[in-house]
Amino acid sequence: MKITKLRAYMTRDKDRPRVIVAIDTDEGITGWGECYNHGPDRALIPLLEYVATFLHGQDPRRIEYLMLYLLQQTRFPPGALHLAAFSAVDHCLWDISAKALGVPVYMLLGGNSRDRVRVYAGVYTAPDPSIAREQFDALNKDWGISAFKLSPYRGDLHAKRWGEVVRESAEYFRKVRETVRSDYEIAFDAHAKIFEPKQAIQLGNALAPYDPLFFEEPIRPENVEAWGDVRRSLACTLATGESLYSRFEFLRLLSVGGADIIQPDICVVGGLLEMRKIAALAEAHYVTVAPHNPMGPLATAVNLHFSAAQPNFRILEYRLPHGVNYDDQKAASDGAPYVKDPYLPKDGYLELRPDRPGWGVEIDEEVLKKDGYIHWERKVGRKPDGSTAYV
Image 1: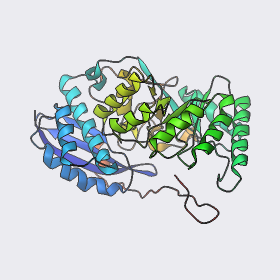
Image 2: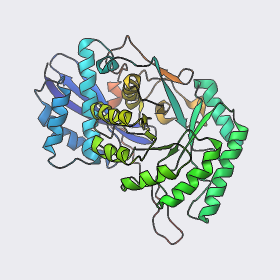
Image 3: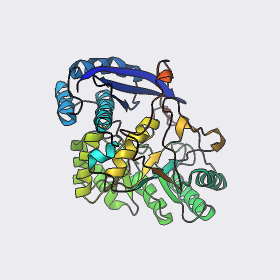
Image 4: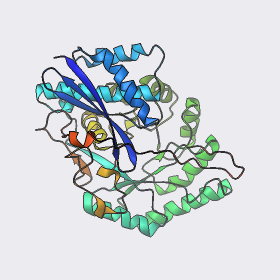
């Protein structure tokens, strides 16, 4: 079997741009993958066209060889755009390899170590505990989801004395706990907005008495040693890793004891192959994996297969197709812009599809023929003195 062509498509998932990749073979098998949208997303298309020159004529089933070959072409350690492109290529190669054998991808990873994959939903629009309860209950009623993630901040964290930010966050979590069902699990994502580790520790320990599922990414990722200091001072579970890339960066984090849960992104780190290596390092440190997954329904399919096979998997981040807002369940669709049959939760879990080869989903190529690019940029806050805030 030989690779004959790489096709890259610019599309969208509601308000976010998506780059979807197809790799065709001379045996009529096509594999599919999804890039992470770091921005600038349009830069991924010519980059992927360049990457295609190294893949033409190669056997797509030689995944380890091909991914090492691509990595070595960069000469220096690749950055965000390179790894987003490589991730999608890796996804395609696994999809092709599994389809060639007529099996799901997870069967190439030693088989499924679990029968279904638990998910949690990000709910960031709940300003009041009663509204949070309504949103949680709606998700639980419609999809059986019982784990959720909130923002810990009750407004602009730069507009108040830090002690007030901490007090308000703790009081909010206490009220949420008293308002919602006791069996719901609730995590908090601080979105790397805190510059000072001491402040991150204060916030995490204020939330700790109310049993968060985890406290996610309070500080920036660059100073790995600081993560070890933060974790040793926290009374709750610390999760991080969405902003880290290769197994080498995760090894540093794990070596300093910088996380209880790691959150690598399968569309960021270089794909499924690298994700497995990162997870193996975590397993040796008694650390679990909760994949970062804010992407589209194809990325969710890729994550499902990783999660099904990985023994130290914890829980998977999940977005309903179309990026539908969780406070409007009526808008949910049983389809998706470029995936005809996305994985949807049942009783809070994604079910495996053992009778479907590859990723187990069908791509709508007619949708991909239309350039669905939509501009998106991060909301960068400002401090009272006019300087930019961290995101």
